[in-house]
Length: 152
Image 1 (cartoon, rainbow, N blue to C red):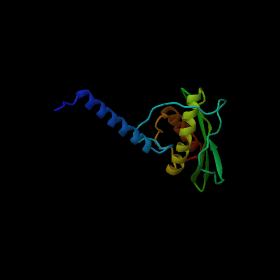
Image 2: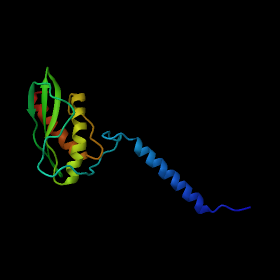
Image 3: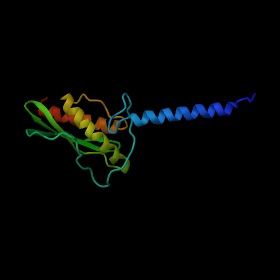
Image 4: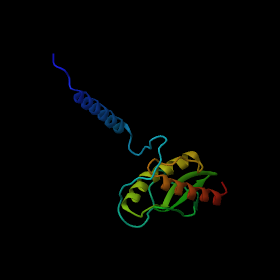
């Protein structure tokens, strides 16, 4: 009777674990944060100055209020909110971190999620985006200053 080598079992276990991790990561939808996770990570949009970030939410007209610029270690964040009927109808980041390509990528991924969350919450009480903690915190600070200016 041939005896199985212990290294073979270990290799099979490692391969099975690796496959399971790959499958789990593949199930994460792009643009969706992982629950409970938050840290500053990286990426790369086009180089250049801070530019408004898309939000997937179209302004419905009404009063616009510009929040204060919030400084983060990766660059400034500033939001403009649009209000109508006493509620927030849209939020747009007019300045986003751009100190390097990684910061631009993080902002490009995080800002649309933050914009949607702010409109849904109708306040600055929103969760940070996983992988974009500093950008999220700057966004929330600027959003709160805009809400304060608007009297909300």
